[in-house]
Length: 113
Image (cartoon, rainbow, N blue to C red; front, side, top):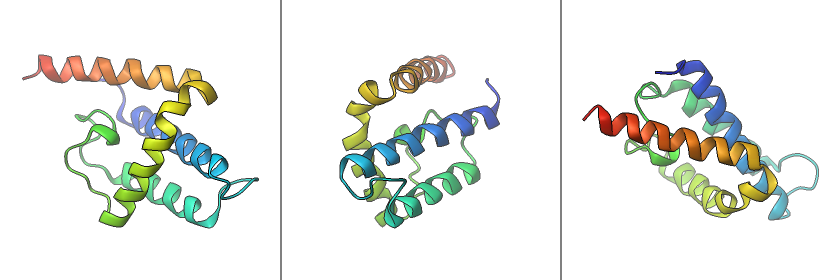
């Protein structure tokens, strides 16, 4: 399995990019993140840093544990629903890498069953 810290770094990078895209396109803030999106970004990074399943899970979006507080879970889902389809246009390399890594990890998990 790939290095867990590298995986955490990539997950945090992807989520931060999605939050930034959401914030900018929803006109919360034109330069940087609005306070609400800053709070969500910090929370998502903290949850990723503390995730005990990082070594064996795919990405947070696929996780069955859902360690986010309910209100933060709903906010991150809204961000993902909005930003996910748009990532290919705004951050194509990150989006394609995420799809490839996600598929690879799904195959690995299926092979371990």
